[in-house]
Amino acid sequence: MEVLVMGSGGREHAICQQFLKSSKIGKLYCAPGNGGTSQIATNVSISVNEASNFNKLVDFVKENRVDFTFVGPEIPLSLGVVDYFEANGLKIVGPSKNGARLESSKIYSKEFMRKYGVPTAKYNCFSDVNDVLKFLDSCEKSQKIVLKADGLAAGKGVYICSSREEAKDVVNQIMNYRILGSAGVNIIIEEYIEGPELSCLVFTDGISYSIMPASQDHKRVNDNDQGPNTGGMGAYAPASLTMLNDYDLSKRIEVIIHKIINGMKNEGIDYKGVLYVGLIIKDFSPYVLEFNCRFGDPETQAILPLLDTDLTDICVAILNKKLGALKINWKKGFSVSVVLASSGYPGRFETGFEISGLENINTEDTMIFHAGTKFETGKFFTCGGRVLSITSRADNVRAAINKVYSSVRNIYFKNMHYRKDIAWMALNE
Ligand code: GLY
Image (tube, rainbow, N blue to C red; front, side, top):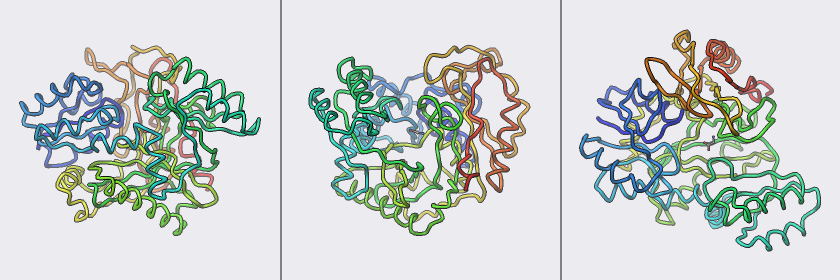
């Protein structure tokens, strides 16, 4: 089979590596890809984030007789790439534009949850800045307030404010100064829920679903969950919190997933691909924080190394709406993935530095996933905020942590920054 993967991050490099484990894959393309994917697939230099490029992607797929396309990131999904490909008679794994609204509109996703009885934080929606300010005046002065921009904001659309005044300031920035552009035209204010977060991803063909091992992302840039939020600085799977072993909690999460899949069916949404359900656990009860309509980054770099079923078979089953007939197996053990970033990320950072030491990594149980890298004159250079994800697998979480950090210490690029405490929660259990 010939397969095209859309995207350019660590997630897409992990997806490409997983496809290449299959004996069914003949040729693999990645659009636009990165330095890592250029070594294992053919990079196709077409940006996937503009709808005006969809015709170029369709032409490429037709000319190269690609059997199916797998979409990594949310932007092409929210722009309707799946609908466009299908209208052109092409096979593509990902939700339709309608399904992608679960991620591209926070207000839509909240209304969906309310309609289908999915537990989530209480909320109010606003489109007028004066109404928000009036509402905030009715809140306690030092109450924690969660503010969310309705649209896609590249991971920057959620604010946890520790006072009413701080929230007012953020509202001003988003709604008057438009720091998030059109993503902040409408906003949500929601109740703050405290507790550990879990990423629960499922494969689905819109009829059946299969839950992947739960994982946990580390969103803050510095150790001990300090500093600004990022796209994610590392992840581990399966999330081994004691509470997850609680039969009741796993059952409750399954009930939630069931409600979501049935809700989508009821709405007439054609959802083929991966649904990411972001959960927060309070007093042993799960609440849905957010949906993503795709694999998470960096969760994918921790989850896929545990997959023991051919990803190609999973995609074919999804495309044929036969996922219910496929048993998906997972390897025993744990994987821990650490993101190596350019210092300054998620703010301003410099790029163009040579990356060294990758050749010293023992790749038996350790995987190198590239994100912000480019390959030039036989060398890798940094070209983004999140540069690499290094993942190690082992029988227990401590061994996976030791293995991954001993690999990370072999790698060097100028201004390299990484968290030293990925998976700490698993050790505190
Ligand atoms: N790790 C969070 C995300 O993929 O959106």
